[in-house]
Length: 281
Image 1: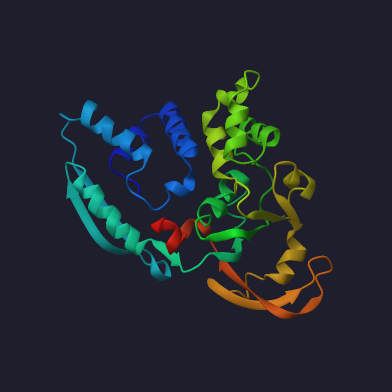
Image 2: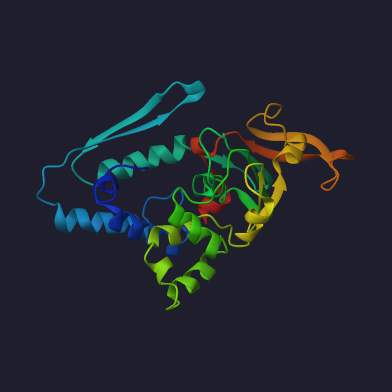
């Protein structure tokens, strides 16, 4: 749920507020925040509303929507001057905007449209939108035909290449080192490195064609050929959700007999997938 104080303090607060609030969330951990209301970041914004904007005449108008078939449907309209409108909107958003799965996904395949996703900076949405649905020891395969870089600008790209997606604790360790002033000066990139890592809980394989597999592996992901992987998991033949596909040899790509179950997501921007038991924890 966006809006409310977030749109004030982050939306118009400038890069310093964006970077520091993202870093707070990264330190706390994505899987402790996704799909929830009362997080440390939200509490900071609530504090700011109470102490700095209490006497400003601010009226919030929040909507909860879905887009079945591409047509926007409004499920709720919440208007108010205090926190209650957000609290109630979040409750409805949890009901309407989370795709729950019962039991963790063993193998998840996500497709990144090349017209929208040209970098891992954006493409890693495939990781943090699905991470709460993937089982421990599971596998995420990202079909990324358009990814040809890591960062959206040269500086971020260089930092990602230098430090890689190697987990929250590793990134925080690098962040604290005196010699790594470049990472500390770019807190938003440090937060991104944390968000884009699976923390060793499951594997992430990027299937690419516009960047070398060696480059993908150098930042901490597994790599595969897009052309080879798409023979096994053809986006044109898959439907959103669970699919049963023929099992193939991971080396040769030849039929190996039998079938395997995968969970397919055609666009990670359109949802948040969560194992119901993980959210309850």
